[in-house]
Length: 196
Ligand code: AMP
Image 1: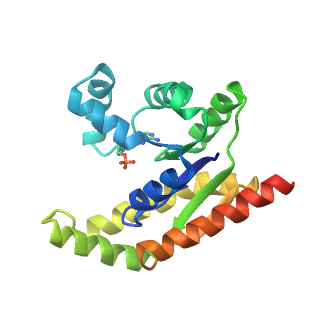
Image 2: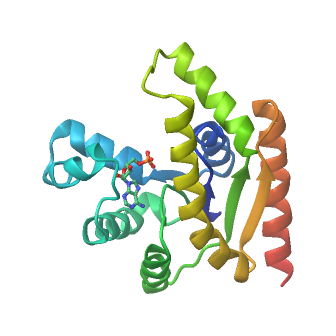
């Protein structure tokens, strides 16, 4: 059983690796972006509240996001482990998650970060933009999105690094190579925490 975060930039193959991990360990994947998109589609009250922020490329306010995450973590299928993706994204959300998990008598086992060189990422996203005909994804827009990601991520990863929870995995290579590296990193981390 694992309670973990998966962090990685756009284009790092995070979704694919998340599927490998959740299948192997029999845990649920919880992606805040997916939950929001699903609710926008169904036009639920949550979706209607989140929509304008998402369309503007902004964070949905913590008052909405935090409670949604707490509710999701309280559901029965999340009691035996989870992989959280897209949350926490700020130091304040890290603090909220700490409290929410402590309230349930739980804590995180590992924070896994997929690391891919920035230039390599830009190249990957440009290729994807061409193949998916996303003409608004120019090199400049992509670089800007990357810069924002790295800026935001550092505040979160440095907190978990101080706690000894952060494990970085090289995200370059075939899907199965990366999956192998992820599996090894998780085994090492979980094995190590068992012997502490
Ligand atoms: P994502 O697919 O993870 O990039 O999320 C899509 C959108 O959902 C983001 O651009 C935000 O508007 C919203 N969102 C997802 N996760 C969070 C979060 N942790 N805090 C605030 N907003 C979020």
